[in-house]
Image (cartoon, rainbow, N blue to C red):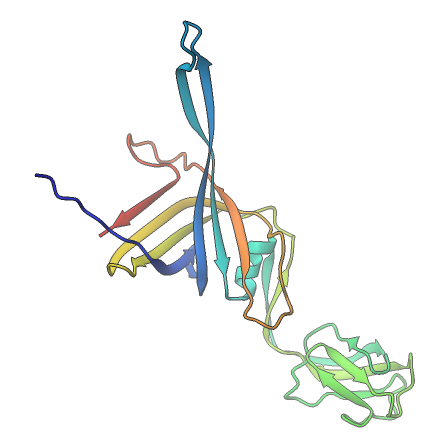
Length: 239
């Protein structure tokens, strides 16, 4: 008598893109689109005499909860540049009263900037004539800076990284999901050999809840896999 094997499934795991841990991923999904062709049965009785079904496309989508520039680069076909801390001297800006005059680089607010009239004098006082943020200088209408005043700011730029969005044509990456079935504790590993993510259709940047964003892309055939019975698209190994 054969034994019925039941394995319930609650999936979790770590998603790696080209070996990089993308952080918390609240959802990963595979969609397979099929195309069918049928030859009608003309001999009476209706129905089909023959039918063939082909895979039209394979899609992999994921919901990411970590807003790193490396993750956003996947969603926005971007390139990430490393930003080093540097001293910026006498950058020219134009005052916007109670508004932001943005600087070329992010300001390291732990190092006090120096803001002067474009002639070099006077030097204005922080929190009296202006306030400073990472984005730039906000002149206060209650201070001595006038609207449209040409200013010079000397500051230390903040180290980090910058995402240049929509500058890449679309990178192909390998995706590995190092997973576990939480219902059984058994390990499973999925490998997608060639994934080409498309730009995301939307990105919520301000809200009152934890953010997430979706990325979808095509899983392409790996022509280097020629062995009979081996998938060119992806493989799932399970304990």
